[in-house]
Image (cartoon, rainbow, N blue to C red; front, side, top):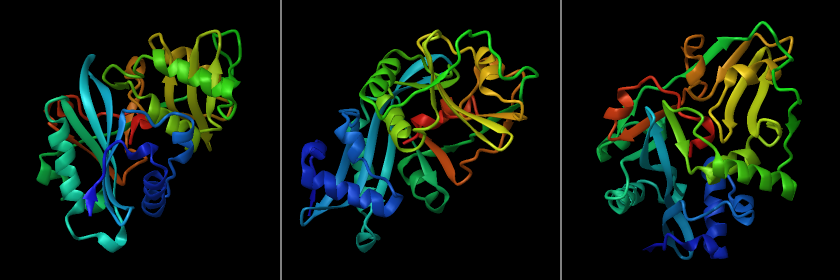
Length: 295
């Protein structure tokens, strides 16, 4: 048994084993993400292997967290998993401590989203829960029209040009919220774009803006906005809504519309945000962490 090198992503046998375990535990596969160049040095696996197979893992995503307009260095923990045949042996705790020790002197925050079945695990490492929310508002009276003269186009990231455009936009994007936002998050965003929201991406060439959005019944879900300029939601919403749109659900904090939006129970009610330390996030709670930056 051994703790693998954190740089094994380029070793096909270990990467295949990692993907197999991720598929078994979470239904995830990172191979396309790797093949398209999105698995970069900011996503680091800390794993335990036995007989050449990955049997436990804790991943660290390096990014910058924007809290009340101030940029903080952060590490988000994710893909915490152990093969069912090897659970109960302390592997996850060993890897968690390794991650905390590795990044203790290089970041201001360590945080993660935990399933409610393991809420007693993370406080043992100094994490505390942070209250989260989503935001909702009534649809604007005018729908289907916008001050933007050109209509948005679907962004097809299965093409090299579409995917290249998305990467260019992410490289220069501002955080979607200054209250609680994320930058240097190209890899995680690309994973969601490829695996979760490939049909929900739109591009406004005139405004240099990518929007991730989709309808569920009478509710428009707005997941993220990628733009090099401050996000002006009041301009985007009329074009995204239809005549049947009654409500808008924001999966981030809509800074410019907080006088009209109201907090509602998160759609991810099964997950809890834990942070170390949690004081600065507690001060602005309840918060809505951007969906497409969640590991």
